[in-house]
Length: 335
Ligand code: NAD
Image (cartoon, rainbow, N blue to C red; front, side):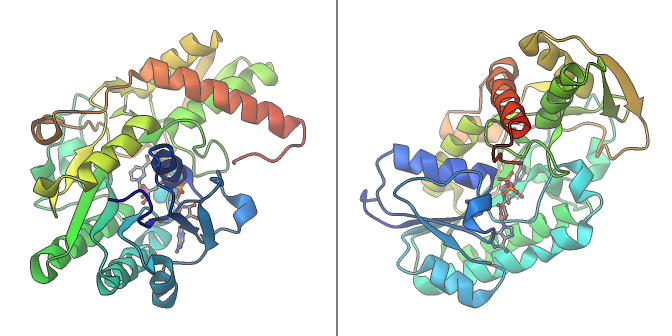
């Protein structure tokens, strides 16, 4: 890649893709096109120097415009959120199939060198995730398929598009299965937030409202691993520039498994605030346990996401605290 080759990133008004635009700018790339359907004032980050376009890439004509002259395309646009969102909006999640279907065709017709697709750990067979003491999921565990309803099936089928564009048409496609990404500039309120941001916000609210308590969805025994945003952007770059990984889905996640109860304890530690916990067994909670098996990524890239959860949460908590204060002061915030 020359530093002035055009990199196109969709979903850039959101969390991960916004961070990716910043990441490539930090690496010295000067020709960046950021695309999202949200109006610009709602973007989480606007990166100076990047061309920021408001386009709905579920429509083919907009995809053609989005990828014009692109050397590389990173497709991260999706209708998405935490468990609270994806369990209740399966139709919306499934409709994201239009995004990758049209983006990959437009990218192929434009002759791009490399195409990255952001998949998810929600593609994995849910039958393997019924126990909190889960055995970490390796890439082959997606089949035989029994993905998360709605969101997971959309991701699995979009992966297949990437695989077949490589097999049949010789396009270099790359697929990462993200496991719960968190960090500054992630959604922290409004219904689409994920557990780490939600727990930080709830602890801040409990202090602000002097309630001293927070509500946890489920019984808190559900286990997950959480990847810090800087590991995610670095991993996307490494995966997309590794020819051994053409059309081979790979886990991109931390392997530090914690329960939701433990997650809350870490937030208490970094914030210095102790809370009483109440539990809502009927709230959305997803699978009982899920972890990332990182044997494949370590073998291929000699690397894995390794930011300790406590370090990443300290930065995230401090950022959400700032957002909370800004909102109280009537300033514009991310969520
Ligand atoms: P996000 O919601 O912050 O960002 C997604 C962005 O895509 C939003 O800004 C949204 O407006 C945009 N978008 C949706 N439909 C669009 C369309 N038709 N045209 C243009 N833009 C559109 O989510 P995120 O956490 O940054 O996730 C980015 C990608 O990573 C998604 O594909 C998501 O499924 C995947 N992923 C994320 C996680 C995670 O933990 N955050 C985990 C697994 C997979």
